Amino acid sequence: MNELELELGYRKRANRAVLLCMVIFCISRIIAEVLAEGSQFQDVVKIMAGACIAMLGVLLLQKANLKSAPFIIPFLMYIVYLISSYAIDSYKYFYSVYLIALIIGATYFSIKNYLIFISVTQAMNLLLSIFILDGHPSINGSVWMHFALILIGSLMLFVVLYYAVNKSNEIDRAFASFGALMKVTPNVLILIDEDNKIKYLSKSVCRVLDVKETGDFIGRDFLKLFNEESVQELLKDIAKKRSFYENYQKITINGQVKTFDLFADKLSDEIKDGMFFMLNDVSEIIRLKEMAEQDSLMDSLIQIPNRRAFDRQISQEWNYALRDKVNLSFLMIDIDYFKNYNDTYGHRQGDELLKVAGKTFKSSLKRSTDFIARIGGEEFGVLLHATNSYQANVTAERIRKAIENEIILTANGEKTRFTVSVGVASVIPSMGMESSYLIEEADKALYNAKQNGRNRVWVTDLA
Image 1 (tube, rainbow, N blue to C red):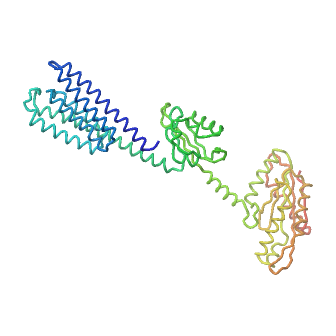
Image 2 (cartoon, helix red, strand yellow; image 1 turned 30 degrees about the horizontal axis):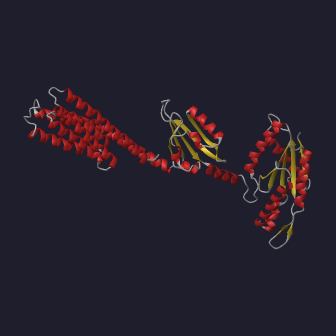
Image 3 (spheres, helix red, strand yellow; image 1 turned 45 degrees about the vertical axis):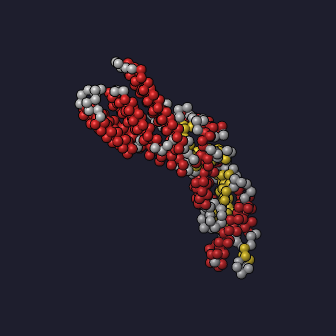
Protein backbone atom coordinates (compact mmCIF):
# COMPACT_ATOMS: atom_id res chain seq x y z
CA MET A 1 0.00 0.00 0.00
CA ASN A 2 1.47 3.34 -1.09
CA GLU A 3 0.60 6.98 -0.45
CA LEU A 4 -1.70 7.17 -3.49
CA GLU A 5 -3.72 4.18 -2.31
CA LEU A 6 -3.99 5.66 1.17
CA GLU A 7 -5.13 8.98 -0.26
CA LEU A 8 -7.78 7.24 -2.38
CA GLY A 9 -8.95 5.35 0.67
CA TYR A 10 -9.18 8.58 2.64
CA ARG A 11 -11.12 10.25 -0.20
CA LYS A 12 -13.63 7.38 -0.35
CA ARG A 13 -14.26 7.65 3.37
CA ALA A 14 -14.70 11.43 3.06
CA ASN A 15 -17.18 10.96 0.20
CA ARG A 16 -19.19 8.49 2.24
CA ALA A 17 -19.19 10.96 5.14
CA VAL A 18 -20.52 13.71 2.85
CA LEU A 19 -23.32 11.51 1.54
CA LEU A 20 -24.21 10.38 5.06
CA CYS A 21 -24.44 13.99 6.26
CA MET A 22 -26.63 14.91 3.30
CA VAL A 23 -28.94 11.94 3.71
CA ILE A 24 -29.39 12.57 7.44
CA PHE A 25 -30.02 16.25 6.91
CA CYS A 26 -32.42 15.69 4.00
CA ILE A 27 -34.46 13.20 5.99
CA SER A 28 -34.50 15.48 9.02
CA ARG A 29 -35.45 18.47 6.85
CA ILE A 30 -38.30 16.57 5.20
CA ILE A 31 -39.60 15.30 8.57
CA ALA A 32 -39.41 18.84 10.00
CA GLU A 33 -41.39 20.18 7.05
CA VAL A 34 -44.01 17.42 7.35
CA LEU A 35 -44.49 18.11 11.05
CA ALA A 36 -44.50 21.88 10.64
CA GLU A 37 -47.83 23.64 11.27
CA GLY A 38 -49.56 24.53 8.03
CA SER A 39 -47.30 22.35 5.95
CA GLN A 40 -48.55 21.55 2.48
CA PHE A 41 -47.86 18.53 0.29
CA GLN A 42 -46.28 20.52 -2.51
CA ASP A 43 -43.80 22.05 -0.05
CA VAL A 44 -42.67 18.58 1.03
CA VAL A 45 -42.33 17.54 -2.61
CA LYS A 46 -40.16 20.58 -3.27
CA ILE A 47 -37.89 19.68 -0.37
CA MET A 48 -37.60 16.07 -1.54
CA ALA A 49 -36.89 17.15 -5.12
CA GLY A 50 -34.22 19.57 -3.98
CA ALA A 51 -32.62 16.84 -1.82
CA CYS A 52 -32.59 14.36 -4.69
CA ILE A 53 -31.06 16.89 -7.07
CA ALA A 54 -28.38 17.80 -4.51
CA MET A 55 -27.42 14.17 -3.81
CA LEU A 56 -27.43 13.31 -7.52
CA GLY A 57 -25.09 16.22 -8.17
CA VAL A 58 -22.78 15.09 -5.36
CA LEU A 59 -22.68 11.53 -6.71
CA LEU A 60 -21.87 12.73 -10.22
CA LEU A 61 -19.09 15.02 -8.99
CA GLN A 62 -17.61 12.25 -6.84
CA LYS A 63 -17.70 9.77 -9.71
CA ALA A 64 -16.08 12.28 -12.09
CA ASN A 65 -13.32 12.74 -9.48
CA LEU A 66 -12.89 16.39 -10.49
CA LYS A 67 -10.10 18.37 -8.85
CA SER A 68 -12.62 21.17 -8.23
CA ALA A 69 -15.02 18.79 -6.47
CA PRO A 70 -13.81 19.77 -2.96
CA PHE A 71 -15.10 23.29 -3.63
CA ILE A 72 -18.12 22.52 -5.83
CA ILE A 73 -19.76 19.87 -3.61
CA PRO A 74 -20.35 21.91 -0.44
CA PHE A 75 -20.99 25.10 -2.43
CA LEU A 76 -23.74 23.46 -4.52
CA MET A 77 -25.19 21.93 -1.41
CA TYR A 78 -25.29 25.38 0.13
CA ILE A 79 -26.94 26.97 -2.94
CA VAL A 80 -29.55 24.21 -3.43
CA TYR A 81 -30.71 24.23 0.16
CA LEU A 82 -30.62 28.00 0.31
CA ILE A 83 -32.96 28.22 -2.70
CA SER A 84 -35.20 25.44 -1.38
CA SER A 85 -35.49 27.02 2.05
CA TYR A 86 -36.27 30.45 0.64
CA ALA A 87 -38.79 29.12 -1.87
CA ILE A 88 -41.00 27.63 0.85
CA ASP A 89 -40.58 30.42 3.37
CA SER A 90 -38.61 28.27 5.80
CA TYR A 91 -35.47 30.35 6.25
CA LYS A 92 -35.45 29.37 9.93
CA TYR A 93 -33.58 26.18 8.90
CA PHE A 94 -31.01 27.99 6.81
CA TYR A 95 -28.22 28.51 9.36
CA SER A 96 -28.07 24.78 10.24
CA VAL A 97 -27.78 23.94 6.53
CA TYR A 98 -24.94 26.40 6.21
CA LEU A 99 -23.02 24.97 9.19
CA ILE A 100 -23.37 21.46 7.79
CA ALA A 101 -22.04 22.72 4.46
CA LEU A 102 -19.05 24.17 6.33
CA ILE A 103 -18.36 20.88 8.09
CA ILE A 104 -18.51 18.97 4.81
CA GLY A 105 -16.32 21.59 3.19
CA ALA A 106 -13.74 21.18 5.93
CA THR A 107 -13.63 17.47 5.13
CA TYR A 108 -12.26 18.29 1.69
CA PHE A 109 -10.68 21.72 1.99
CA SER A 110 -7.33 23.13 2.76
CA ILE A 111 -7.47 26.13 5.08
CA LYS A 112 -7.06 28.51 2.13
CA ASN A 113 -10.05 27.12 0.23
CA TYR A 114 -12.05 26.90 3.42
CA LEU A 115 -11.53 30.62 4.08
CA ILE A 116 -12.59 31.40 0.51
CA PHE A 117 -15.77 29.39 1.02
CA ILE A 118 -16.60 31.21 4.27
CA SER A 119 -15.92 34.61 2.70
CA VAL A 120 -18.08 33.96 -0.37
CA THR A 121 -21.02 32.47 1.51
CA GLN A 122 -20.96 35.10 4.25
CA ALA A 123 -21.00 37.83 1.61
CA MET A 124 -24.06 36.15 0.07
CA ASN A 125 -25.68 35.92 3.52
CA LEU A 126 -25.05 39.61 4.13
CA LEU A 127 -26.55 40.67 0.78
CA LEU A 128 -29.49 38.34 1.30
CA SER A 129 -30.14 39.73 4.77
CA ILE A 130 -29.98 43.38 3.65
CA PHE A 131 -31.78 43.35 0.30
CA ILE A 132 -34.15 40.36 0.40
CA LEU A 133 -34.93 39.11 3.90
CA ASP A 134 -35.43 42.45 5.62
CA GLY A 135 -39.05 42.49 6.55
CA HIS A 136 -39.72 38.96 5.25
CA PRO A 137 -42.75 37.54 7.08
CA SER A 138 -41.01 34.25 7.93
CA ILE A 139 -38.16 35.99 9.77
CA ASN A 140 -38.76 37.16 13.32
CA GLY A 141 -36.44 39.63 15.05
CA SER A 142 -33.56 41.64 13.70
CA VAL A 143 -32.02 40.52 10.40
CA TRP A 144 -28.71 41.81 11.63
CA MET A 145 -28.97 39.70 14.80
CA HIS A 146 -29.77 36.69 12.65
CA PHE A 147 -26.77 37.42 10.43
CA ALA A 148 -24.52 38.00 13.48
CA LEU A 149 -25.48 34.63 14.94
CA ILE A 150 -24.63 32.87 11.67
CA LEU A 151 -21.32 34.74 11.43
CA ILE A 152 -20.33 34.01 15.04
CA GLY A 153 -21.28 30.34 14.62
CA SER A 154 -19.24 30.14 11.42
CA LEU A 155 -16.20 31.77 12.99
CA MET A 156 -16.35 29.48 16.03
CA LEU A 157 -16.57 26.51 13.72
CA PHE A 158 -13.66 27.92 11.75
CA VAL A 159 -11.45 28.12 14.87
CA VAL A 160 -12.21 24.51 15.78
CA LEU A 161 -11.74 23.26 12.24
CA TYR A 162 -8.60 25.34 11.73
CA TYR A 163 -7.01 23.55 14.67
CA ALA A 164 -8.29 20.16 13.47
CA VAL A 165 -7.14 20.70 9.87
CA ASN A 166 -3.73 21.93 11.03
CA LYS A 167 -3.29 18.80 13.08
CA SER A 168 -4.47 16.74 10.14
CA ASN A 169 -1.93 18.46 7.90
CA GLU A 170 0.82 17.75 10.43
CA ILE A 171 -0.16 14.09 10.37
CA ASP A 172 -0.21 14.12 6.57
CA ARG A 173 3.29 15.63 6.47
CA ALA A 174 4.53 13.14 9.02
CA PHE A 175 3.00 10.30 7.05
CA ALA A 176 4.53 11.63 3.83
CA SER A 177 7.92 11.66 5.53
CA PHE A 178 7.27 8.17 6.84
CA GLY A 179 6.28 7.01 3.34
CA ALA A 180 9.46 8.50 1.87
CA LEU A 181 11.49 6.77 4.57
CA MET A 182 9.83 3.44 3.84
CA LYS A 183 10.81 3.81 0.19
CA VAL A 184 14.49 4.69 0.61
CA THR A 185 15.55 3.02 3.85
CA PRO A 186 17.85 0.01 3.38
CA ASN A 187 16.40 -1.51 6.54
CA VAL A 188 13.51 -3.94 6.49
CA LEU A 189 10.58 -2.27 8.29
CA ILE A 190 7.46 -4.28 9.04
CA LEU A 191 4.35 -2.84 10.73
CA ILE A 192 1.80 -5.34 12.02
CA ASP A 193 -1.54 -5.01 13.78
CA GLU A 194 -2.71 -6.71 16.97
CA ASP A 195 -3.47 -9.89 14.99
CA ASN A 196 0.06 -10.00 13.52
CA LYS A 197 -1.30 -8.98 10.11
CA ILE A 198 0.97 -6.79 7.98
CA LYS A 199 -0.09 -3.15 7.74
CA TYR A 200 2.95 -1.74 5.95
CA LEU A 201 6.25 -2.90 4.45
CA SER A 202 9.31 -0.97 3.37
CA LYS A 203 10.52 -1.35 -0.22
CA SER A 204 13.78 -2.91 0.98
CA VAL A 205 11.80 -6.08 1.79
CA CYS A 206 11.95 -6.95 -1.91
CA ARG A 207 15.75 -6.85 -1.99
CA VAL A 208 16.65 -8.24 1.45
CA LEU A 209 13.96 -10.93 1.77
CA ASP A 210 13.72 -11.66 -1.95
CA VAL A 211 10.03 -10.68 -2.11
CA LYS A 212 8.65 -9.79 -5.55
CA GLU A 213 5.83 -7.43 -4.54
CA THR A 214 5.19 -6.00 -1.07
CA GLY A 215 1.51 -5.39 -1.83
CA ASP A 216 0.91 -9.16 -2.00
CA PHE A 217 1.61 -9.45 1.73
CA ILE A 218 -0.50 -6.55 3.06
CA GLY A 219 -3.16 -7.97 5.39
CA ARG A 220 -1.41 -11.36 5.66
CA ASP A 221 0.38 -12.88 8.65
CA PHE A 222 3.87 -11.34 8.79
CA LEU A 223 5.43 -14.76 9.39
CA LYS A 224 4.57 -15.61 5.75
CA LEU A 225 7.45 -13.33 4.72
CA PHE A 226 9.87 -16.00 5.93
CA ASN A 227 10.10 -19.55 4.64
CA GLU A 228 12.30 -21.14 7.33
CA GLU A 229 10.48 -22.58 10.35
CA SER A 230 13.32 -21.58 12.70
CA VAL A 231 12.94 -17.93 11.69
CA GLN A 232 9.15 -18.10 12.01
CA GLU A 233 9.49 -19.53 15.53
CA LEU A 234 11.97 -16.79 16.48
CA LEU A 235 9.74 -13.97 15.25
CA LYS A 236 6.62 -15.57 16.69
CA ASP A 237 8.30 -15.64 20.10
CA ILE A 238 9.36 -12.00 19.70
CA ALA A 239 5.77 -11.03 18.82
CA LYS A 240 4.64 -12.56 22.11
CA LYS A 241 7.29 -10.65 24.07
CA ARG A 242 6.37 -7.43 22.18
CA SER A 243 9.87 -6.06 22.64
CA PHE A 244 13.26 -7.32 21.44
CA TYR A 245 16.71 -6.08 20.48
CA GLU A 246 19.68 -8.14 19.38
CA ASN A 247 22.86 -7.31 17.47
CA TYR A 248 24.22 -9.80 14.93
CA GLN A 249 21.21 -12.11 14.90
CA LYS A 250 21.71 -14.95 12.43
CA ILE A 251 18.63 -15.50 10.26
CA THR A 252 18.28 -17.90 7.34
CA ILE A 253 16.69 -16.26 4.29
CA ASN A 254 15.87 -18.65 1.45
CA GLY A 255 18.63 -21.03 2.50
CA GLN A 256 21.24 -18.28 2.92
CA VAL A 257 22.40 -17.33 6.41
CA LYS A 258 22.42 -13.56 6.91
CA THR A 259 23.30 -11.42 9.89
CA PHE A 260 20.86 -8.77 11.12
CA ASP A 261 20.53 -6.21 13.85
CA LEU A 262 16.99 -7.09 14.91
CA PHE A 263 14.76 -4.63 16.76
CA ALA A 264 11.08 -4.97 17.62
CA ASP A 265 8.75 -2.97 19.83
CA LYS A 266 5.07 -2.19 20.32
CA LEU A 267 3.55 0.84 18.56
CA SER A 268 2.11 2.17 21.82
CA ASP A 269 1.48 1.16 25.41
CA GLU A 270 -1.92 -0.22 24.45
CA ILE A 271 -1.86 -4.02 24.43
CA LYS A 272 -4.30 -4.18 21.51
CA ASP A 273 -2.05 -2.06 19.29
CA GLY A 274 0.36 -3.68 16.85
CA MET A 275 4.14 -3.79 16.60
CA PHE A 276 6.92 -2.88 14.27
CA PHE A 277 10.01 -4.87 13.33
CA MET A 278 13.25 -3.46 11.97
CA LEU A 279 15.87 -5.75 10.44
CA ASN A 280 19.16 -4.14 9.50
CA ASP A 281 21.14 -6.42 7.19
CA VAL A 282 24.75 -6.21 8.42
CA SER A 283 25.98 -9.34 6.63
CA GLU A 284 28.40 -7.41 4.41
CA ILE A 285 29.65 -5.32 7.34
CA ILE A 286 30.30 -8.47 9.35
CA ARG A 287 32.11 -10.05 6.41
CA LEU A 288 34.36 -7.01 5.99
CA LYS A 289 34.91 -6.85 9.74
CA GLU A 290 35.94 -10.50 9.84
CA MET A 291 38.28 -9.94 6.91
CA ALA A 292 39.85 -6.94 8.65
CA GLU A 293 40.17 -8.89 11.89
CA GLN A 294 41.70 -11.79 10.03
CA ASP A 295 44.21 -9.45 8.43
CA SER A 296 45.08 -8.00 11.85
CA LEU A 297 45.89 -11.52 13.07
CA MET A 298 48.21 -12.36 10.17
CA ASP A 299 51.88 -11.56 9.69
CA SER A 300 51.89 -9.59 6.45
CA LEU A 301 55.35 -10.78 5.38
CA ILE A 302 55.14 -14.51 6.01
CA GLN A 303 51.34 -14.96 5.86
CA ILE A 304 51.08 -16.94 9.07
CA PRO A 305 49.42 -15.86 12.36
CA ASN A 306 51.18 -13.12 14.32
CA ARG A 307 51.80 -12.57 18.05
CA ARG A 308 48.31 -11.22 18.63
CA ALA A 309 46.79 -14.36 17.12
CA PHE A 310 49.20 -16.50 19.17
CA ASP A 311 48.16 -14.86 22.46
CA ARG A 312 44.52 -15.53 21.63
CA GLN A 313 45.21 -19.13 20.57
CA ILE A 314 47.32 -20.12 23.58
CA SER A 315 44.64 -18.84 25.97
CA GLN A 316 42.07 -20.97 24.16
CA GLU A 317 44.30 -24.06 23.94
CA TRP A 318 45.23 -23.74 27.61
CA ASN A 319 41.55 -23.80 28.63
CA TYR A 320 40.90 -26.84 26.42
CA ALA A 321 43.86 -28.74 27.93
CA LEU A 322 42.77 -27.73 31.45
CA ARG A 323 39.25 -28.99 30.75
CA ASP A 324 40.36 -32.25 29.09
CA LYS A 325 43.35 -32.83 31.44
CA VAL A 326 45.73 -33.47 28.54
CA ASN A 327 49.21 -32.28 27.64
CA LEU A 328 49.77 -28.97 25.90
CA SER A 329 53.17 -28.66 24.25
CA PHE A 330 54.84 -25.48 23.04
CA LEU A 331 57.78 -25.22 20.63
CA MET A 332 59.73 -21.97 20.67
CA ILE A 333 61.83 -21.76 17.50
CA ASP A 334 64.63 -19.31 16.85
CA ILE A 335 66.58 -18.91 13.58
CA ASP A 336 70.29 -19.28 14.30
CA TYR A 337 72.56 -16.32 13.50
CA PHE A 338 69.77 -14.43 11.74
CA LYS A 339 71.40 -11.05 12.44
CA ASN A 340 74.61 -12.16 10.75
CA TYR A 341 72.63 -13.41 7.76
CA ASN A 342 70.89 -10.04 7.48
CA ASP A 343 74.16 -8.14 7.75
CA THR A 344 75.81 -10.32 5.11
CA TYR A 345 73.07 -10.54 2.49
CA GLY A 346 70.81 -7.58 3.31
CA HIS A 347 67.31 -7.23 4.73
CA ARG A 348 65.57 -8.21 1.52
CA GLN A 349 67.37 -11.53 1.54
CA GLY A 350 66.57 -11.81 5.25
CA ASP A 351 62.88 -11.39 4.46
CA GLU A 352 63.20 -14.16 1.89
CA LEU A 353 64.71 -16.42 4.56
CA LEU A 354 61.78 -15.69 6.92
CA LYS A 355 59.29 -16.57 4.17
CA VAL A 356 61.04 -19.89 3.50
CA ALA A 357 61.17 -20.63 7.23
CA GLY A 358 57.47 -19.93 7.73
CA LYS A 359 56.53 -22.09 4.74
CA THR A 360 58.70 -24.95 6.00
CA PHE A 361 57.29 -24.76 9.53
CA LYS A 362 53.74 -24.97 8.18
CA SER A 363 54.49 -27.93 5.91
CA SER A 364 56.17 -29.81 8.79
CA LEU A 365 53.02 -29.76 10.93
CA LYS A 366 50.76 -32.72 10.20
CA ARG A 367 47.58 -32.06 12.19
CA SER A 368 44.93 -29.42 11.54
CA THR A 369 44.98 -28.57 15.26
CA ASP A 370 48.70 -27.71 15.23
CA PHE A 371 49.18 -23.94 15.36
CA ILE A 372 52.20 -21.97 14.11
CA ALA A 373 52.73 -18.20 14.64
CA ARG A 374 55.50 -15.65 14.35
CA ILE A 375 55.94 -14.29 17.87
CA GLY A 376 58.97 -12.07 17.35
CA GLY A 377 61.53 -10.94 14.77
CA GLU A 378 63.07 -14.33 14.02
CA GLU A 379 61.18 -16.27 16.70
CA PHE A 380 58.29 -18.61 16.00
CA GLY A 381 55.97 -20.59 18.25
CA VAL A 382 54.11 -23.86 17.71
CA LEU A 383 51.23 -25.05 19.91
CA LEU A 384 50.50 -28.79 19.93
CA HIS A 385 47.23 -29.80 21.62
CA ALA A 386 47.04 -33.19 23.41
CA THR A 387 50.72 -33.81 22.68
CA ASN A 388 53.21 -35.08 25.24
CA SER A 389 56.92 -34.21 25.39
CA TYR A 390 58.02 -37.21 23.33
CA GLN A 391 55.57 -36.44 20.51
CA ALA A 392 56.52 -32.77 20.67
CA ASN A 393 60.19 -33.68 20.38
CA VAL A 394 59.44 -35.73 17.22
CA THR A 395 57.68 -32.74 15.65
CA ALA A 396 60.48 -30.38 16.67
CA GLU A 397 63.13 -32.66 15.11
CA ARG A 398 61.10 -32.90 11.92
CA ILE A 399 61.04 -29.10 11.70
CA ARG A 400 64.76 -28.79 12.47
CA LYS A 401 65.75 -31.31 9.82
CA ALA A 402 63.43 -29.79 7.22
CA ILE A 403 65.04 -26.38 7.77
CA GLU A 404 68.52 -27.86 7.65
CA ASN A 405 67.81 -29.19 4.17
CA GLU A 406 66.47 -25.90 2.79
CA ILE A 407 68.56 -23.97 0.26
CA ILE A 408 67.94 -20.26 -0.39
CA LEU A 409 69.37 -18.61 -3.49
CA THR A 410 70.58 -15.01 -3.25
CA ALA A 411 70.18 -12.43 -6.01
CA ASN A 412 73.65 -13.46 -7.26
CA GLY A 413 72.68 -17.11 -7.42
CA GLU A 414 74.66 -18.03 -4.32
CA LYS A 415 73.28 -20.97 -2.33
CA THR A 416 72.72 -20.24 1.36
CA ARG A 417 71.52 -22.37 4.24
CA PHE A 418 70.32 -21.72 7.77
CA THR A 419 69.42 -23.66 10.92
CA VAL A 420 67.06 -23.30 13.87
CA SER A 421 67.19 -24.02 17.58
CA VAL A 422 64.05 -25.32 19.26
CA GLY A 423 62.99 -25.22 22.91
CA VAL A 424 60.19 -27.61 23.83
CA ALA A 425 58.04 -27.53 26.97
CA SER A 426 55.10 -29.82 27.72
CA VAL A 427 52.66 -29.62 30.62
CA ILE A 428 49.23 -30.78 31.78
CA PRO A 429 47.58 -27.52 32.98
CA SER A 430 46.10 -27.35 36.47
CA MET A 431 44.09 -24.81 38.41
CA GLY A 432 46.19 -21.85 39.48
CA MET A 433 48.71 -22.38 36.69
CA GLU A 434 49.04 -19.72 33.95
CA SER A 435 49.86 -20.24 30.26
CA SER A 436 52.81 -17.84 30.65
CA TYR A 437 54.50 -20.59 32.67
CA LEU A 438 54.59 -22.84 29.59
CA ILE A 439 56.10 -20.03 27.47
CA GLU A 440 58.77 -19.25 30.07
CA GLU A 441 59.82 -22.92 30.31
CA ALA A 442 60.01 -23.26 26.52
CA ASP A 443 62.14 -20.08 26.42
CA LYS A 444 64.49 -21.63 28.98
CA ALA A 445 64.70 -24.78 26.87
CA LEU A 446 65.53 -22.68 23.80
CA TYR A 447 68.30 -20.95 25.71
CA ASN A 448 69.77 -24.36 26.60
CA ALA A 449 69.59 -25.42 22.94
CA LYS A 450 71.57 -22.34 21.93
CA GLN A 451 74.08 -22.73 24.72
CA ASN A 452 74.74 -26.30 23.63
CA GLY A 453 75.71 -25.51 20.06
CA ARG A 454 72.47 -24.42 18.29
CA ASN A 455 70.77 -26.39 15.49
CA ARG A 456 69.28 -28.69 18.09
CA VAL A 457 66.12 -29.42 20.11
CA TRP A 458 65.96 -29.11 23.90
CA VAL A 459 62.98 -30.65 25.72
CA THR A 460 61.60 -29.83 29.16
CA ASP A 461 58.89 -32.17 30.43
CA LEU A 462 56.84 -30.34 33.08
CA ALA A 463 54.22 -33.06 33.43
